[in-house]
Image (cartoon, rainbow, N blue to C red; front, side, top):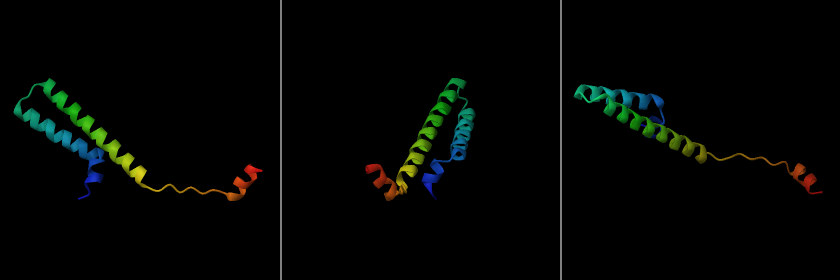
Length: 76
């Protein structure tokens, strides 16, 4: 299983949130507790998606092409 891809998936975090909310509702927690836990999961999910997407973007090489003729003309 590709955990990097899973952790960067919004569907995965929506599923985790749904399961946690169901478990909290099953235990009879008050709405304030449920709201706080959902906010925490959302924050962790958003941070994970950002970190993994930035890591993937930074790991790819940048293809830079320089026209040497244009550079030489600028120096003259």
